[in-house]
Image 1: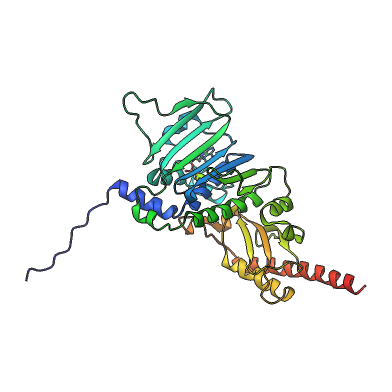
Image 2 (image 1 turned 45 degrees about the vertical axis):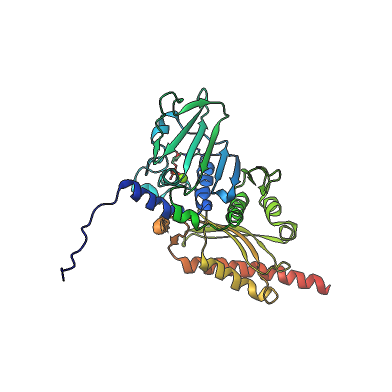
Length: 355
Ligand code: ADP
Ligand code: MG
């Protein structure tokens, strides 16, 4: 028999490479939306409106009143690794904004139809630009210029249509648009609680009523009430702890011992990004356990600021997980302080009851 020879190694086509990379960053519509929300917050917006069709697979649109995008930046806006937020690798250590890698818009442009309408404080009109594979789409003869002038107020509107239209296997993996919409509402709700000074709205295309809505002036408690209801909002304990040696500051609003539900709600932000941390979740749950009836769980909103040079945000392409120094000690410190707080309230409550 003929000997088996290896197949020769060839570089992948750049378009394929970009689609693979984009698919790692954006696995579901909610991941695209998270990047877009963070961009709008980074742009200093005080109002962010989100419109969703078919769980974000047909349409994801986000409109903000932030500083807009300079006309001269539109041609390179969706190139990979173009950003206004980071210049050197060292900057990664002190980055105060959400985004930092200039990958979000690039990724979206590879796997969706992307249109951006924007206006800055000193531009005479708004501009609308459409992108494909990182680049401005070249208009066909007789078509209007790209970008083209349009009416709009200061700020930016990003329209993402037909997400994964060119990644059929990914597209097929989504069975239920309503499941994706639930994830989207959960995410928007998180940012709506965390981002004081920003009014949020989120609704389904064609729906009269909104899924999430908050006002810019609302307090944290008000925002929690809007999104999670009055029963939890009326049983919240403000919480704060910091430690200079460990280089962190935690602030939040957590339910007291009067309140419990079947599943823990944890709204966790680390350096202003919504993230998940099983160590913090477990720590909070076991701190509450002695104070709550069996099977009862708390509500916790916690914003953790850790000195940026102690945090490694680059462990995961989606930036959903972060690593930080002294994780165990920080979680322990938070739980000790929470325990004291819960115990103090519990004592005063049982004292009041015996009076
Ligand atoms: P990054 O946020 O990491 O810089 P992105 O691809 O998310 O990368 O965005 C690229 C750049 O586009 C940002 O640095 C910012 O200058 C600009 N930009 C994106 N979205 C907005 C927005 N909503 N308002 C103003 N500028 C924006
Ligand atoms: Mg970004």
